[in-house]
Amino acid sequence: RLLGVTARSEVADRAPHLEALEGRQVLACWHPHGLYVVAPLLFHSSAGPRHQGSGIYGFFTAVASACFHLPVFRELLMLFNCRAADRDVIEELLGAGRSVFVCPGGIHEQLETDPGQERVFFPPNLGFVRQAIKHGVPLVPTYNFGENQLYDIPAWSRGVSQWLRRTFGVGLPLGFGRFGLPFLPHRKQLSIRVGRAVEVGAADAHPTDERVHETFHSYCVELRQLFDEHKATDLPPEVAARGLQLIWRGHEGEEWEQEHSWAEGLPEAVQQQHQQQQQQKQHVQQLQQLQQLRQPRWDASLAASSAAAAAPLVRSRL
View (cartoon, helix red, strand yellow):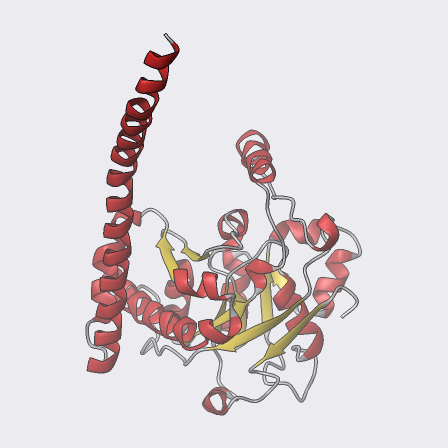
């Protein structure tokens, strides 16, 4: 609250659809990463894993391993049950029957934070899906609405960050909030929404790619439904209208095929809604193309008419 940011969480509010998850081991995923990971920090400080009355008591959260190289900050993370986002660490926690929070987008999603467009990135190998199947634990999507709108990111800041990443392997855009100051966020109330669990079936230490992809598609369907259910109330209208972009790194060209495959097997009403969204996207694209085609012609006709109007004046002066 001192920073002007508050959070409303469905876990803290004991949303009815989460009752079925109480007492179950899960692999929960939060989206988006955001610039400075404010929503998860508020979430863990209020209804966190150290509070016996909370719905996530005993959960562990995977954060960038680089954070554990910082004295004092490292100890604070440990108090919130945070652990390094390392595959072996997560495997050990899941193997011990613990529930874990992960952010599949990671540093890549952090660097691509855009207050005007909601995007979710997934790793090429879908490691989080493979881990869930290996241990037979359901995947639970969570979405932090408002996280991306806490800071404005100038183009020069993003450019410097990309240069740092190419040169030194690390980079973080500088975000500006209230009064144009860095690190001071805009006043916002974040909404932490939790989707329904995506069952992965029986545990399998070596799942086939087909099973991993099928589970991933089911997860994306649930994530999209979660986003569509709350975007109108939890996001600025112009951001909600642009929708959610799901990007599977290394498979960007397959997005259209993936979107159609995600709709298969869904209830007819959901399929119709999906088709309407795709038609609206195509309509907007067609309008944009028409505007691009008309713009040069309009400029040319305007120049011609201006020249014709100026010609008598020129002759009269001569």
